[in-house]
Length: 367
Picture (cartoon, helix red, strand yellow):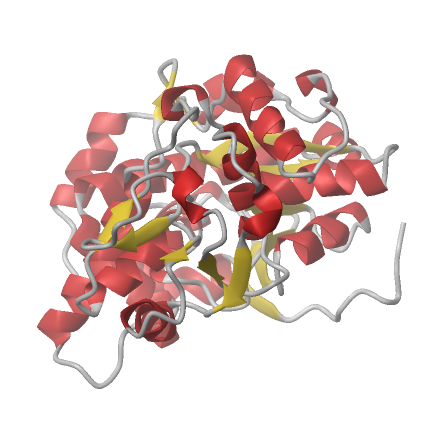
């Protein structure tokens, strides 16, 4: 399937040749590279790769994909829904995006063979927040209030409405205000342009990085431990059938990078600055830039967890609870059998690596 209305590809190529010098400098000469395989077009759901994304892009690009012989063609896309459509249209081979967009795709294209094989955000990372001294305490307190979101097309609108529905309040009473991220979102809270913000872990860390202390609203009926499958790595069944080994190696690199980032967050920051220099905060001393960047990395790592001993896993119960949240928010019209869109059969192979060796590599990393 192709669709000429989709946006043109804007690529950054991270293959053996593109990363040879970087990988040698950062990983050391002992990391031998495997023979190159066919290129894999990998889509990300954002054009700008924020600091909290390093574990699924800059770190595996630098340390783990080249030695596996992967030739990765990375594409930044304008939003999760666009990323989903690009995968459905065959313009990417593998894509990472929030799973609310997956369910929207399943609703729009019931016959799609898009399938999730890896969960790269497993903990719920989008509870609404308020300033520390706000009188608001629970999600139900958002009735009739102004809530800041990145944009009015963002999935946080539906998620916040769903949370309000679970809390027994009136989702229609919430007034959503676009506030962007970072300093802009912080200013909206400080000037009382909004009463709360509904963003995500890394964006909250950006706000706290500029000195605005935040507090999550209580989740009322929301059991955070029962909720998972927030964002996934996806491919198509037809691509997976022909390229299973490459898909396993790609996500193994992300799993390895997750262990690496948890073991040495500062190294994760410096590698990300190397690959995506635009992510480095400007106009401030390096020590302050590192402090702000570490806030984002650590905030995200709290929501990247092992589930039943496997990085990238989600349980059926977690998936079904997430579907319930989306149903309440009006994102989906009915629940689906998880087997329709979730294939965990690669996870044991993806997790087949020496975690202790990766931690040692992180601890010994020299930038």
